Amino acid sequence: MPKLWSETIEEHRRSVRDATLDTTAALVARHGLAGVTMSQVAKETGIGRATLYKYFPSVESILLAWHERQVTDHLAHLAVIRDRAGEDPGKRLAAVLEAYAVINHHRSLHGRQPHGAEFAEFLHAGSRVASGHARLRTMIADLLRAAADSGDVRADVSPDELASFCLHALNAATEAPAKAAARRLVTVTLDALRPR
Amino acid sequence: MPKLWSETIEEHRRSVRDATLDTTAALVARHGLAGVTMSQVAKETGIGRATLYKYFPSVESILLAWHERQVTDHLAHLAVIRDRAGEDPGKRLAAVLEAYAVINHHRSLHGRQPHGAEFAEFLHAGSRVASGHARLRTMIADLLRAAADSGDVRADVSPDELASFCLHALNAATEAPAKAAARRLVTVTLDALRPR
Image 1 (cartoon, chains in turn blue, orange):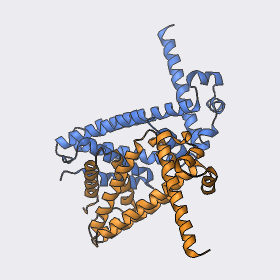
Image 2: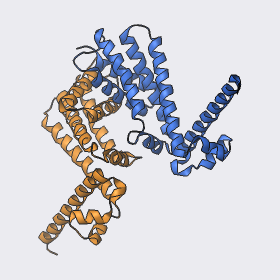
Image 3: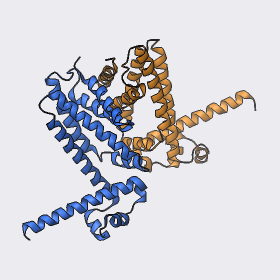
Image 4: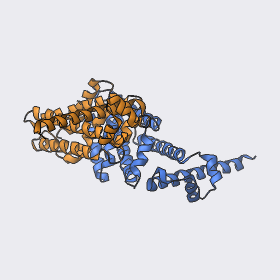
């Protein structure tokens, strides 16, 4: 098979996959996990049921793939924000924490859909999202370590403990009624990190 | 029926109820929700199955009653800590936040049992624990408001937003490997609240 043809196939596969993930996530948020069937997903995505089953065995597996893609996208977004923020460790940290708070704030809008809570519950059960969280935590801990070395962040608490603090504190952004509240939350969190 | 006799009955009922809640929570943490039956609960509690059904319709309902009791106990504990801390608003706030971090740290030991995560997931799904959280949040927000009025806490962010920040940040204590780490977390959280 010529290379160009296989690339087209690959691109087509990816776009079918992406459409499947988006459709399923939207359906589950609206109708709940128990209220969505593979047939519905196939119909809404506009592909055959047999084709859908070639990609995924179940609605649950699609939802997990959707989440994996979300986490990967978010991490890539945070990496761009970090690198754009320049060389100053304090500024890099602040930029990433603010972007993370905004992601959480947006996540919460999704969570306000009829079955948003059940949706989030399914994804966060057990270790399903553990690898994504671990990657995020590593990124934040690395930023904190660099900022502690440069004197921008307190050194009396380890970067790992501070990373845990930051990630939990910024989860409060899921409750922030508006973006301004999410930003105030970032300010408060950054104040906690200042050197003593 | 003479009053004393009815009081004895009441006391007996309460102790059967308490034993049922404790037994069920321990069983579910060990075997998972799907792995525990009403018959098992009755047998382990040492009461008849018919008696058990007089109190509770299902294992789920026992678990919810257990959680409601936990939350009520925790809130009562925090209220004692608060009142013991004296009149100083800053000290009252600090004492309650530290006690809350310790509760979270202990909760996490429970969560490390085989089915701890599933257990927590069940309890935190949807709005099951919403009323307990609301009471806790009100207590923390009231303490923050008093401490802001006395100048012990920053006034540039509302007590409600700061309460949300504190509760989320102190959830990190569930990941603290030791009590010392939980205490450092409280220090960092309190530093964030200082007036600017």
